[in-house]
Length: 290
Length: 301
Image (tube, rainbow over all chains, first blue to last red; front, side, top):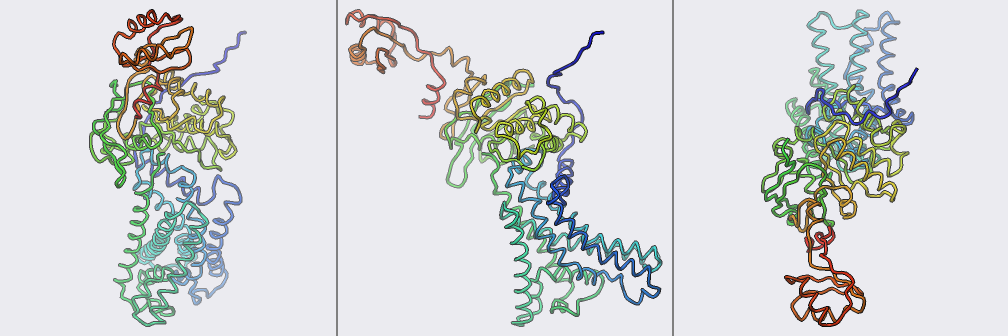
């Protein structure tokens, strides 16, 4: 019997389907989520995202367990989402500062940006896909635990009464989580667009959050120049937005609780747009050929 | 497909007060075309305009039948681009990177995976395709760049200094691969380089940029048949003949016993007569072929 083998089938032209820029955005977004979470990377790269995500979910899991074990758990108000965000806010900051810069810094440092922009992606669709990926990953922290609690408490019979109330609560959980993820995600994008060095971007994000808190609270409380200056605090502003989504105000914290809801929401959205516009301005000036 | 792949008319591009391209005109046809020019001549800027990464400030540019400024994403789906730099994500496997870029160019995941593997085999990295790029040599990284540019089966391949950083053996291999892509694969190539020798080895045509305009464009075949003066070899000192030629209005460059004579009509007759008058021994008299180097120097000046 004679044996035949094909050793080189030569170059084959491709005549299958080709998708457009929308597909490229989805591919880039998916790839970015994987990179940020450390998937398909060394174990060391998985540590920080895994720990921060895990810690963000721990209180929710404890609350769900308590609700299941304690007969009068409804008196403990375990399902208060606004209180929950205060519990995990430092994990969200650590994640924003030390994990999300991977989304864009590495592309410029490794030259991958040139390959991306030589594809059907444009600078704008590239940034949009990156922002969507960062918001998605942050959303795991800002939406995941409260959504888990809502579902668990509902199954345990201690959730909102009736379909309308349940859907209203679901809407608030999603809106709150998205509002925080979009704000800190856009901040991360803007600061990371400054530098190709991930570590530098991480420090800059963390410091900018602390400085904004010091300046905002200092002006509003220390100098007493006006309650509105508390909106400069980029830590409490998104959390205050969450309070307003739940029809409440933060009565325990700085004087941001005294600011009108419209101004809080306008500042929140305005800063997201400003961060996005800044990142866009930076990327319009980056040369990728040569 | 049209015979003209890229057509530029009066293309202008400035960065502030720096006018990089100042009315660039050229037609780039099928096959492999070398884009030559000294550093700062505008090669990379022109590539950026072809890719639609930057809007031009004047003129018209047509790439594969479309205007890059108007249809950038659609055009880039049909282009492959290998940048000059060697930086690629170090912790990513070659196969993953090539598949990812193919997906970005519109291929479904399954097709992208298959074609990424094929492309890496074609560039000689079949066995190495699952290695992280950070562990690869410069030559292998250049091949990865070539593979990612090829995997989605582009109509036009843009290669920016593809042999930069390679040793002589790797360089020969890369040039052979480029020649193979242009001839066997049937993909048109625009090859940016500042190395004349490699352009002469692999290209069918050449466009030379100088000071923001096209200094010369044409096929290398035409260049090979073009002549520029006469070449004379004597069996003795050529200075007397050079002086006599200069006195009759010719330009004579002396290199030992060899003279290169330009700037005069009927140079062969004049040289023959002067050699006879001066009683010199003539070894060789032949038309001098124009080299790419001659054209490059002339265009650059």
